[in-house]
View 1 (cartoon, rainbow, N blue to C red):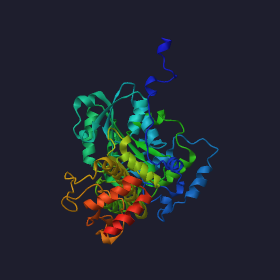
View 2: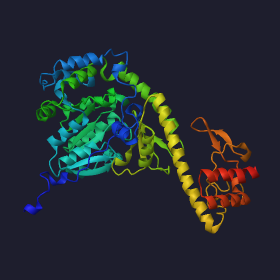
View 3: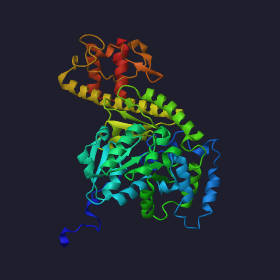
View 4: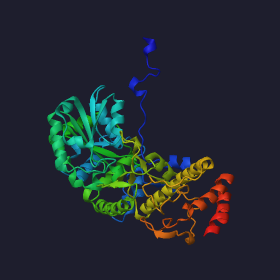
Length: 497
């Protein structure tokens, strides 16, 4: 029996557990690429681009004063009832909620863990529509759950046998990473069906304040013990460093969760700051949040237009991030994210989401200046990558030509004849690009993304047989490098221009 024991005194199924991947890795990226943290633009974490309420003239909130007030309680244990916070949260949500419906939490992850601990036993079936926030599966796996994945579209037609089998289903609204928002009428139907099968609907409304708070279904909780709603302050108020959030459930459900949660799961600073934020006049429709939503819509339209270019297919979003299909781009999501990070711009590689592959990225909407930097960096990265690929192909063509001669016409090319019939394609990737010499027929043209780019569309010279032969004689003898390129330009190109 001893030989069958786990090598560590832990549950066996935890030994293969891998941590979740998240955005916001500013320090890690700074250390990896040698870029100061202050110079890194983080478009990988979905925070309110409007900035914190403390940066706005309305509401008149003084962060330093709140910190001072919170620190006055530093030598006391927090009142683990968190009554002021819970009353503020209930007022913020509205819809008939009271403090008895509120469960305070140290951010979304702790709330997910709390519900998982209180609901899931080892072997229980959990339904997770994919792709979605990976912490749902992580926290359920810690409890030993059996995860069953369904497609996002399947939540509207949940099989009765599957619901009878499942203990809980997680639905994110708006969904992360796709940004799709379900209307409250759609969620009502899902909640009704789940309750009929005694399956808990864990509804994550972490981004609802930045999308459309009118689509919240918090008004349903009191009459439905199988509905739990999660809300987060991190995203709406752009303060991830102060961990705070809350759950909304029926009074009976909430009472049990409040008894089971960690006794002091929020410290004095988080309690004080969160209570002040949730107490802003207007709640989810405070001037700050209304202005935030208007700001997001404006910048969303700008970023969506700029991202709609060859290889990028951005998907309409209801919230402060955009899900982008890059399957038509030769560069995959991991390579693109890493190259962007090396230039100091972080985007989210969606490869870590369930079975999504390397065809999608997520970009958080930022300020106009930051959004312009994101687009500019994407352009630069694709250009650099394209040059690298072109140089590799060019070297292969020259290597092949050393034994076989000129490549000849590539009649299978989608663009053939892009210059003239019977052109030679050995230098399809021109070693002189961008030569910026109009004698070649090349010229500057307006880029679809703004600015100018050098176009070789009307340059025929490097596709002429004699010119190709002369260029190859240089590159085969001297290799492809700065010196040989300069020599080839002077001895071959200048002679033929």
